[in-house]
Length: 255
Length: 265
Image 1 (cartoon, helix red, strand yellow):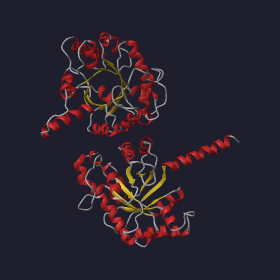
Image 2: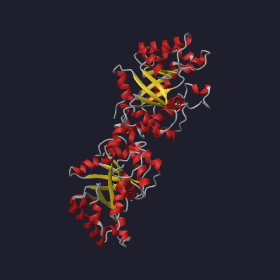
Image 3: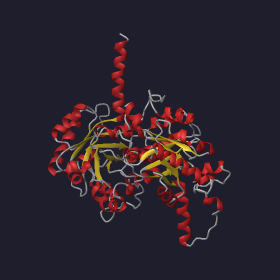
Image 4: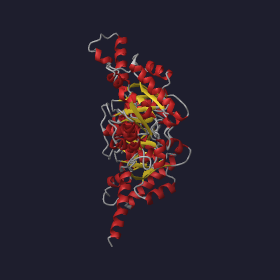
């Protein structure tokens, strides 16, 4: 397996900026891979992506400089195992709200003795360097990020952020807002305050802070503050943005 | 990524080795390519590969260093343009028997003014790039001579401008000489025809390629001067590996039959 670019960027004090993907077409994945973001994050939690489609997307992304991270559908060791066996270079585990949940996510991604990952790196072991390299390096190179996206996590931040083996956290502002009762107002001041609280806890513990930035302003804000892992948008969002521009053009052409 | 590495190796005088895919499995195509052959050919003439599976296989080959080659079902400009648009960098056109057919195949591979390929490199723009002059230079046009008539017309076929090489199909060729299909040159008309095609390739400065049954066959044909050697097909490798592993494990043969020795899979 190759070096995990995103892990190295973060370890060197730099930040990794990428985007999330939910479109299953491998050609789109190939085009995104050629755009050379630091990472791409394939979202199998909310994206309509079956495991065989995920394999095809990973194949289409092979050779891209972008680290390929995958968000599993849940904090579930079976899903995580299957995703890593296909050759994902890291996982972003949704809805982690306690140290136990964080430790479970990390264990799922590591072979014994550090974890409980089952053996069967079907595609992963056939990539750069072959099987031996994969088996000796996977525990170190596979990145594990967990998502802080529920208000229950706020009381447990110190325990979560200091879990051994954790490479960083990613805030999910939308789910966090929903869990706080602000489904109609994700930008509510209480939500902003909660994100600040997560950020400060990360600073305190030296844990890399990441965030799903849904809009440019948010990406600018958090990168400026020192966030280490930021998604600056998603494929479908870019489609929406392109369509909005095209619609404006059509409107203006029609006078 | 605006260079056909296989063609570059031929320009450098190298002998190149490839694998042949008939299963249509993306993962198998990727596995083969990651072992470092000079090319992997996706056979959509005889292979069990629909368009979607073919397209997925191209993702499996991308950025591995193995050039994606495709054998099209027929000498048809629609098919040839379609596989090139998807990102094939070399096309093998079956059953070419005359110079006229050779010219038609070349035109299908080239944009104006060299040919009549229609512009629409939907995925190819990501691989060889969108420049039509680059595509005309880099795409390899390979023609199959695999009939007695094709051998008789080899001199004219090989001298058609724009032909990058001839890919000999010993199986079909054997049939047209009244022999059972085989990938091994049979002494007499069959072998003489194969050598005659090779000689015309050398005379015209184009590459001689050939389908081989296995490594032994490929070594022999390399010694004979062929520079594009397909060593084996994925199906043949799976079958022979299954058979030998079972035998080595001590399993009694149950279903293995004569037909399992076919070189065509």
